[in-house]
Length: 572
Image (cartoon, rainbow, N blue to C red; front, side):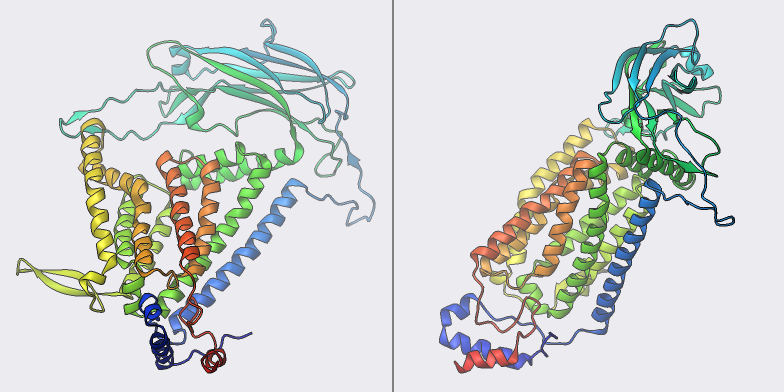
């Protein structure tokens, strides 16, 4: 049913006064809201419709993307030729399911050596069920001369099919060449001494890449029982055998020294790969090659995406993709309800029941994080998201506060934020909470700043300031929610909070918790994903212990529930 038309503010005030006369004590503890009974403004209507459009667009795009991935994993091949209307001839795998195969693995300077004995030679059945991965540990080594010349140690494999005489082969290097990482010099700021960086050897004569050892090599034989028509196959085919390097990320590689020979232990695994996974991986490798031309092959976005797709369980990966869409949907819904809530509240209600100063301090913290992410060359999309969040919070502050110009030292004009309504000092619970919070945190922040300055290296004073500030935001950012808890406690009510926004944001936070467990990120940022859960559960506890005033005539958005029902209550 449609929302009933809001009643005039005077009617709500009259009901509140009548309730206060009947129960002075209850009226003192639970004052009626001072929200303005206005219809939604044009701005709120635009935001609401825009959010609904974005949510629907996300859902349609997700359905389209899901169908595209399905066609990649399990493509449908035509049965008939569209020109001749004849059934197409299909070609099967030479390796039939259940056939006995022979595999050999070598590690040498040359691929498939004839004089070097294999590190493993074994027979297995070409069958998905019952296959067990074959693993061997090897002591890999490479000399300084080989690194300088770009000569790699080769892992080579060959799988023979005795019934047909077919042999498939594959090879891969034990040293991976990666682009020279950007070297950003760091100093001990008090002494000005340069902090030493451990050099890594170049790989090849061009000196554009460095070499790192691979601690685990995976040889994959694709298990494929699909019958392919022309042009996907022109005769019976043999399955793909390859050395899988898709999963490798730079942080998993072994750093080599420049002084002499390098030795490290590496594991070699031989296993089967499902054809759907192979198609997906081949498609992703092509996509990464295209994206690397835009973002760079060593960008953090590329490394995280590669790690996510390669090292995540397929079922968990599907769940992650689904909840990613839900996360965006709930974030937009939270944004929509947040704007509607602050637009529907007057300045007096916001200053009394909402911790506006926490939002203001949060803007400062988000701005510091934005500068830190910019200094660390973070993803552009992350920066845009941070800017949008800061702009929204700035608008929220303007609903409760206004800018006034004062003269600093009586000379320099300085903008200051003041409340739009006059508040008694004893009732300004927001300022009281922020005061004691600042007194408690300043010693901790100061101590950490001194420790970081004395024992850690930084690129400069600007980077040091951003590093300390961002570390404090990550570790102490959740305490900005505690003033709202204090305000709720003093007023013994949570009726004035934007609960729809809190619920949507809480669901998004729980999704962030899932991301924190499967996506590579700094430990401090991972802990930051779990911090909001604690305060949200405190809000739920306060909602439980502070009983709802059933005599009130407004809903959680401040609008009149029903004029008829309110009059009926009054008559009874």
